[in-house]
Length: 256
Image (cartoon, rainbow, N blue to C red; front, side, top):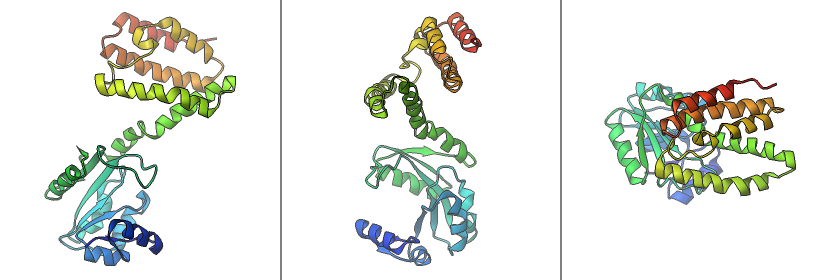
């Protein structure tokens, strides 16, 4: 039995029809099925789990990256196995393909074994997460998703100085970003890093600092990222300790 439940019956019916399932009310779907995914908003997971009746033989999963599995404690108290199943993917539209992405799972055996089999069947990469780490895991994943949008917004703001548009920025920067991602995949994070810091080019960094001097927020943003760039350049052996110290001193200097 495959079932879909939603607060909106029309939504449930539409999705059920597209995947060969039956649309049912929430408790009816829970009663009929053994494996249940709660894909409600994070703040509703615990409340939804408490509102339903569970039994031994149920496996209950939520798909939140940040919410602890303990939010399903009421299901566990009724005898169900509980866990987390979080695809590390941005779902920009309903047609997003999971194949090749990483799925983070958290559960105790024997449910854990079933989840690992499921991940493999989906053609995905497995990431096991221990209890208590979900918020840290989810926050860090945000650096590779929504913070990319922040970086592009920062660039767009700076390019506005000569009236370049967002379209101009995307046309210019996205190919460079894709090339950077390709080189990271090939050579690793530190070894693939381009830019003046990786070359120990203090003159270019100084020029950047001067150019950003009238934009305090942008200047702080640039300094923070450059400091981390110095650490990566040292890890890769691209600059020596003396050059790293010189760059740190330059980045720490308050400019008048």
